[in-house]
Length: 388
Image (tube, rainbow, N blue to C red):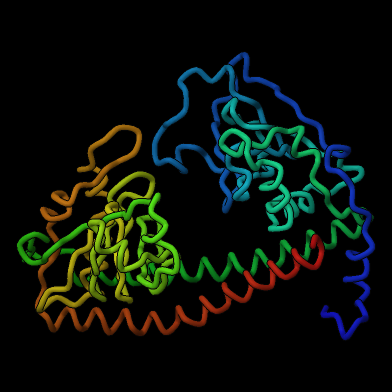
């Protein structure tokens, strides 16, 4: 409900007059250990999904084989990585069975007679709380937030029924956003299914290196301010490849940065492959003229190959690329691996038919993306209304 003029609606007024309290008076740290080794479900906490099985998050086991020092979490427990909470990596455990997290995590519970768990979680992930957290961690080792510092956070604490109503409203917005995101996923699966239907059994294939030119980028020295300040050249990093269709990038470099590094211009309709680390194997289609860092392999447009077809063809080879990757804890895909990748080589008419199908699906995607954006904006405005 919106505010009119200088008058607050009843809902806004409740949030406005809520007493601000120190979080430390309402939460308690605990460190119950898996000393007998009975619990084997290992979780990580992410900023977007909360608690997730570690094997799902990392796509393999990265945790210790000895789990007796890991911390137990039960339903209603909070956990966060002290060096990651400043980006919202805090979760509320909802499982019926106990789980465990790394001993590096901080685990705590809230006094539910005074504070609603979902209300507290929404606060901790809000920009209002994150700004306080960044102030509390400034200058500390790796910006780590100890539990004692977490207790210094100031949060508005309206009566419990009001907290629950606020949490329910925020949950509803999240549900609508999630439903829209699920529709996007289904549309993406529709296109992938169509690709397999049209090209899955095609006998004619071609190696990327035999048909396309490829290149990687570079990173200007971060110590040289003139390479970045007031830059107007889009500079894409490997973490942004996962957008899929890349129409914007967050960072810019200057002409001096471009001239004094291995960064180079990448043409529109290039297919991008993230080569290193956690994003290795992610594939994108560039729809703006941009430069990239060295962790991105660009497959440049080639005559007789429709970009949308190439994008989905390369995307279908993600698992293969990961299997070919070298390195230790995280995979590294070389440009050589990308060049030897073999994709279907259909007639141009068949590629155009597939691209036309993709275009029709993209029209549906536009409306769904708008819904996602509107729900995201509404959620942020509600957080500001209730916690700001």
